[in-house]
Length: 262
Image (spheres, helix red, strand yellow):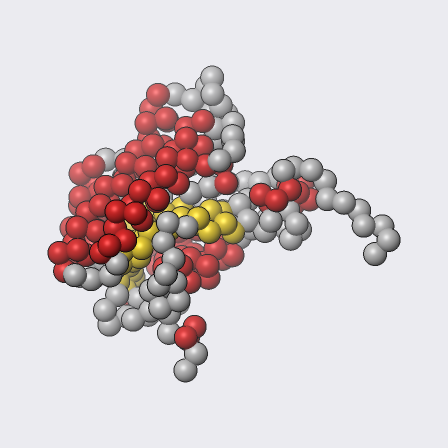
């Protein structure tokens, strides 16, 4: 039997995905239920959560949850709801993030917008990861966590609230991986490039800066996410940042060479 045919053990594993109502989070949550994994779809809008579940390959394995993860009480409510619905959460994906507006540059971003971005990305990511790890450690069970960061964790984006939140998450992944590793809980980052999803509307002209010649789609992230989440495929991978960007980070915005003599 091929190892890749059975990346998960649905009898013992269950997942929680934040930001599962749209974009990358939705694609990953749908892929997890497609592999037979009971999965909590968490997001801030009920209509989007319901639509994401309805479009899933196995909606009977999906559990909806709606709330604002900028609020600590909502994070605790999500943990309780997940435990009640699917039992021990072994796989956690943190993809939730407020919408980004290009107008929110360094001189325009409000205190509330700054707070919300950090609260949902960083604060919720840390709190949920730590509490889920406590449960796994108490049960003596392995786990796998995946936090969505960004290429702009290392390069400016003209959106300081977004870039700084993602940069902090990139270091959080390393801190958690180092602390949780002794308990067989792996923590990794998935680093998307220009993905036309989740409220991000990219100029099609951006494709000329991408070696693979096109903008990314949410579905481009899901197979890699599942591979990294799988304790069978990626058992020795932790603290890593897996870049899925079509090569965008290689270009540094310069035009590619012409290669006229090929």
